[in-house]
Image (tube, rainbow, N blue to C red; front, side):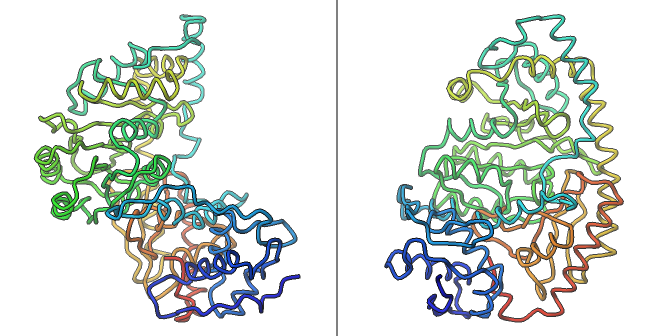
Length: 501
């Protein structure tokens, strides 16, 4: 039996390195030196936290990351052990000295937080951490009718491979659909993809090489960070304000170190909900043209607007051909069908088609034909109108519940669309990571804000998906969050504040 007293380490409580990172460094060093032998049992997280007089969450996160790296293994009911065959993850290439963030750090920095957030999937937890609407919004009966009609009309043709570019009638329907948003394109500019996530991935693969850099808003969509990590590319975050990415700071960065691609979500940004105004959109396009850097526009939430004026997508404002527009029908209609699209000019389109063909030959034909039929019948527009009315009601319920239940000093902006409330907790209390496990125990979950930052996380922010819950559950969940924050704040100390940052 391994005794906790054998874990000797000196923690610098006043240093810049987070406590959990110091734990990882000390434990890893002891394993590699042999002072912690293979098979040795480590103290329970609560035991080690008490021994070192630190937060238990710091220990939980340190153990989780060391497990992901292969140093530790966990056995239900027995504890945490040094792995029998320690094969740490050292296979990643060394980054350039100019890389904005080391590749290995990008791969590992938020794994512990993501592991924690899986706890929200437990039965009985009101989970505001998910990234999609509730299944109650999905038009199941309408889809059934569409699929039956397609099978009766097309027979086996509906089950075969389509062209890599996509089912031609669907591409034409998408051309017509985006024209209502102000986007001018031809059918030949449209590439059908397996959802918006694949659309983003295809653009990254086609335009950015391993070890190269993209820039994005900070905070940003977590999916683009996942793609970057998988493709081993670097991500540099440009600070944002309530109007989206700061163009002045973007230009400063570009002048010093031109990136390969600019990724933005200008309308109802995930996670912050910000909307880039028209003048800033034009500035971004002009800047990209000046420095010959393509823009990848993620328009998946563009039509989720409940109030405020309509602002055209970047692609609709682009007179130079620098904007590649990616979107889809997943959030507004049927996530499981995975139908997205890319609008791009000829100079990128053929390369994107080749990457798409190599990835999966083609998007499933039955799904494409069913979505095409639903577009033709006007079901998409009806569904969007219905959903937005209900999301607006839930947005109002979320804002009212936050005002009632969240602590004084909590801050949020009322979103004009989208699915999320981006909340910053008061800095005189627990961080979002500290709050998480007690919140789960109370029956409520959320997305910890740190996972949305490529560079400089804010430990006090959280993302709350109000679109996934009815008003009564929103009120109950927010009430639980407020209660657990107050409970933790009463016993909060300076030592406990040094958490996962």
